[in-house]
Image 1 (cartoon, rainbow, N blue to C red):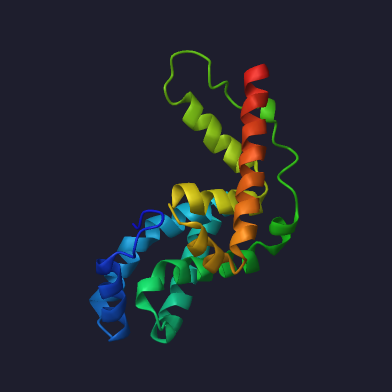
Image 2: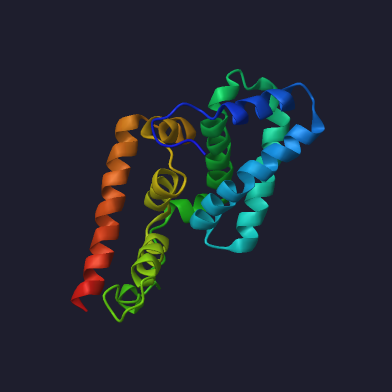
Length: 185
């Protein structure tokens, strides 16, 4: 995967070009390479494994239909996540406009300072992330879990870079508030 701010991976670009030339094994390589990232992204947004599986499959169908029209193979990653974003928004429109699940008890999240469990903080962060509204969860997932730079997130979500930065700020603040609430309980 590309690190934030770095040039696209030339191997990914080559696989995309091979796909565009009609090489069937290249598309399998592309699926193998990017399905874990897409699935992680879908699971963070949908919070339902079956729905995430369906969404990822829908994304790959759209990629298969549109890959020939991709003019900049080196920009495959933001193009792919742009398709994923639009697919997820279409399928999750009702959840996308609603606030986070009101039934989530943030006080029930584990205390990151409790015991000697080194994974408690990581678990608390993931549970706090899952409790965020989907807009904030999406931008944090792309930035931190998928290591996408601001510009690629802006391209994928079809929003200005300034909006990406403000959503990241809001998401970090909300997540920090969740974790701080855990420390005080």
